[in-house]
Length: 89
View 1: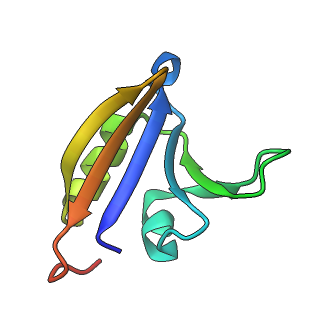
View 2: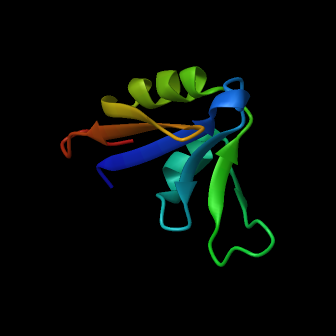
């Protein structure tokens, strides 16, 4: 999977950080130390880590992911990262 989205709430810039959904690569989620959770009432799962986004971005950089874009949506900060297909974990 060459793209990853990570996000956090502006008031929670020190974590937790959402790092994936139920379709995310399990090996990358394991590398990040993410836990899979389903919030009551949602019909989907998400992966979260307790670290702030900066530490998650540093970890993803080490395995070849680069930030493509970043934006704020309401009270949420979102980063889109891409990894060239020749790189492997």
